Image (cartoon, rainbow, N blue to C red; front, side, top):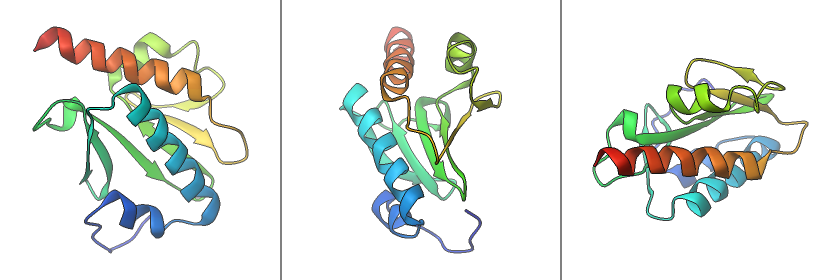
Length: 125
């Protein structure tokens, strides 16, 4: 969603989304917090971000964003490399995947991806 509005919380971001986008974003949020209950919710680049470690910088965050026809999950390029085959039905970028709003989210796969990223970070700390 393109906007000049500066969001200060994820809840505020969600409120400004169309209903279908909002629902999918809330489901993504639930998946992230289920897989990484220690995650700290914040706004980064004007979209919801979840720092997996305290004070986590961009590469230690999972980010999500809402769009007109899909939601984006930005877990990390290494996560995308590991799960690229399981995500073959979805449009992917180097560090992102798009989930169409007209299909159910693959929640168990999303949770698995977040758990993997969380484990990667824990090994480096």
